[in-house]
Image (cartoon, rainbow, N blue to C red):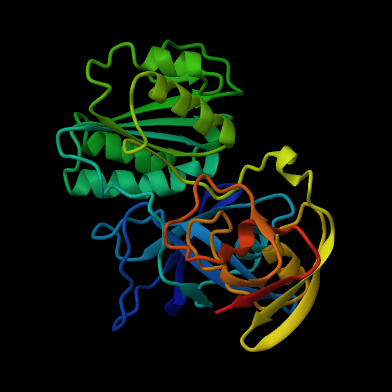
Length: 345
């Protein structure tokens, strides 16, 4: 894993609670990334280390700076720190870009659908700009949900792109808190649900020749995927960006509070893992300086080797093929007994 120190060169509020942070590209050791990937930021706040992934809102080859866009979260230590404390000229440590929410599988003659809600627009904006600039895909369609007009992140940029690419980019807005008076076929009322998704597809003649990128709440992902899979699309055509693991409470039935031994950088520590907390969370609460990034089991940064005892990984859609025997991901791992020993290599 490579680390970089980036300088903040611009701060721009997109909405009252959403900020775009622009970093200067290093002159010598430039950072390469793909549209749709994320940048992991590292902060020390109140003597504790915090690591958070934020999607790029910039696009490679389009924007000179490296941009991320951050929405304020209630109780969010890092998002509030960024929005309230970060200043132009500040230096921020980051990890190498990561993520597979990218355009690599998209073919030139296919349509690209981008489904987002709220701050889920961030990686979608990176993808839109890159695809338009490089003429990827036949048509690009953004379906974007918000509470109202004032909550639209990148509203000006989206409008400008529609003017620049009127025959390639189309946008449909959904608002949950708006009374529609003028007839506008590109504005709809309510959430993006299966019924509305089916209505959007009424005029689509070749839906099977399309690729779909979804970023937003779990309900949005489930609604879009259920319709797409019912129409015969497969996993190679439908991609979702996940920053939260969905866990089934039934999987915790045999898990109780217990102690775990973690060895990191040749230093061993014993931490209490409360029922419902994963080993990574417990280690960080115990002020162990553990490596991690996405916290959803995708990046593999929090990989560890199980030396003793039994653990259960919960929330993974599938076990990564890169994991070797007796390896686990701390962000998804829960101890099943009191003699668990792990080494972070």
